[in-house]
Image (cartoon, rainbow, N blue to C red; front, side, top):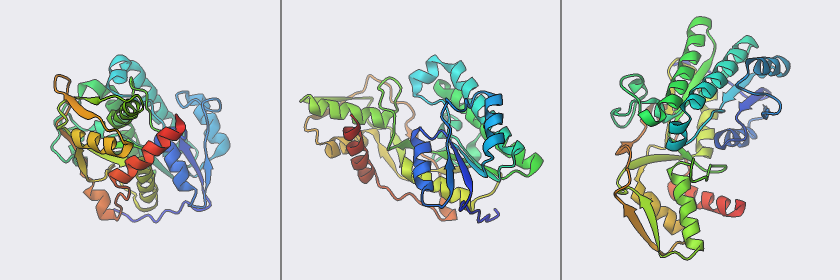
Length: 313
């Protein structure tokens, strides 16, 4: 791998998806890089519309792009709106990547998801597990769109020498997360339910499943730091996993949230509810070998997240 030493200083850097948890974290992280951060809301540019994206890129001409925009959701959302998840995400990435190439963007970072890997991928999941088996059926539409984004970046690199790279984060949490119980992921859902149980004086908190599945979590601010690091130091064909390298059982996660939130009731696990995959861990050794590791521990990250959620309610 070539060490690019790409500097963001003095560059015009477009963050697509700046209102989301990841995009907003990238914007905060870029504040210390001496660059001009460009953003555009839906009222200015519809990323699903090619003409809208082409016009904006032609006017603004960014030097670098972080593509963190996506239509996202939990199992229920993916399962009930598969066409939306596939179409919207294909359009967003195709339009932004093509416009980036057409207007001479120097470097682009495409952001994927750990759901790109096969349902039964060997654990921890290495980058080369991609396309080695069937996907998890409940979110395959989103996963297929993200795989197409990786391949589109690789195709522009192969055909045109474009410096377009991809990163695949593990399960994320932190500032600006989604706490809607119908569409949120496990950590923010648990956090909200714990605080509501505490505030209403409940004697117990029910958690879906046995509590035994193992999951890996990364704070969004750590991800943003990793993305800037990769933008500055990585230039190659293959995508890069971004994880904390630490896993925690759902039971221990719930216990940690309960402790940090000050809920004094009992935890009750409903084993009649589905557990999902027994273990889901990314192999981030490639990123670690480049010299980057996560800095925000689970307890510290949860403490910060609980405080922010309470202040925002």
